Image (cartoon, rainbow, N blue to C red; front, side, top):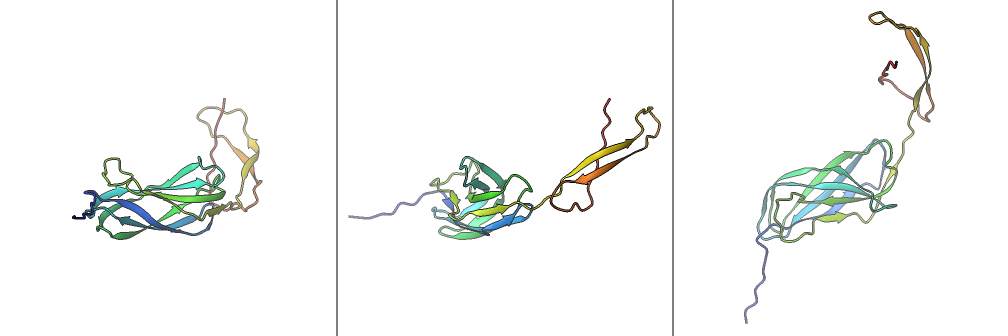
Length: 178
């Protein structure tokens, strides 16, 4: 009797581990490190796209893609490569606990032995809201009868209703309505 072990004729890429801080404030960078392994038969030599998402612990249907890094290079058979990314967290609407999910080899044309490309962290990342300013215009003073082609003079008063100090620079936009 002869025993034989069958190995795929395709690379088999997967995420082995994810390392991420457990807390970040909105508006800051979330630093991620992960390891991609290849348990397929041949070495992987090429280009692949990965997908990094945050999955809400409150609603697992709330999945937000935050980055799509590209890897180009070689991952030997039974080898690994370290990957990293720094992703800016938006200022609003992301507060709460999130799982980090990394999917490797999302290229639709890439053939692999198995579909085992998704790894999600067991621990969560807590995104905390930072205090923000909230500027609003209280009053507009100036000419009310404008003549096309002539200079109009006006001024306005801005108030900060937010909990943080507003620091310059910012851009004011002026709209005329008829």
